[in-house]
Image (cartoon, rainbow, N blue to C red; front, side, top):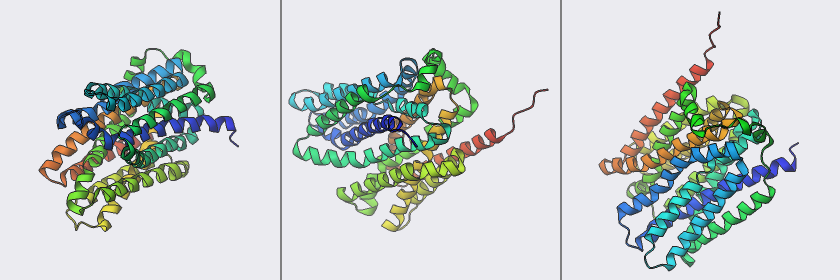
Length: 401
């Protein structure tokens, strides 16, 4: 039976990721309107929105590798205080006459400090056995799903009171979690015993790319995040033009996606990996993603009978794929390099979230179905890589004479 000591750290890690994603979900629907108040052009708003993922792309491996050297706890706590500072600065901007520069600065800081997901994943890897690691990563994924579900709803409710209030609430949540972490989160014993082995962080990152099998997993991360974020960026446009959804119906659709995602990652991943392992789940997740994107892009009659199954397949596929492939990257890393390797993986995901919305928006201009059919083709490439990876791993090692 798990002790309270082991449950409490994972609860704090879960809360850290949850707060990050609630903050992300709160900001997305409000930030464009917030920046528009100060005369930001559409291009400036686009740059503002992409700056968060750009900073995560750069800093996820840096923070992950830093946590290998100085410990998980200080990196996580400092990053939460950074999130609080950025959120409070966004709220304070509403009281200044010319604050677009402050909004940009706060969003950049939030992207840097929000790059702590890899460190949180490394903590889970430190305190779980290999058999239970995918389940732990699934709980992290459930925090993602719930954050995306609750974030926009909370943001919309609070912004109706005052447009700056959501930012102050996120800041207060981050301060509370950081304080609890400082007093109650133990440094993982397994990580402490290997800390002396963590040397140059860039050599750890380069090592992840030099390994042929790890490189295949990282490519899957990049491909799938690009195609999935292209879908996310254009789905609201699709729902409005083809399904005549109003904003409330569109919000319901995103809530539905988040619920399916959280259910799969929080309830099914642990059982399925225990029975089948991570590699079959990666393949199954990609098959579901290809099917969902294809169904969404086919010129069928616009009806809930087409759209809801498509987005359910997409959510389920992502829910299976992400924790399984994260666990595979973790398994291919030494205990001293968990943060660096998982940080590289998160950087691939962040790079996809930078490129995906730009590509999705551009393709949508040429035809509503193109982001989804092109995304299905890209996901099919990821499926081919996953099948090749499985064959490579299953191949017996040559016997030296």
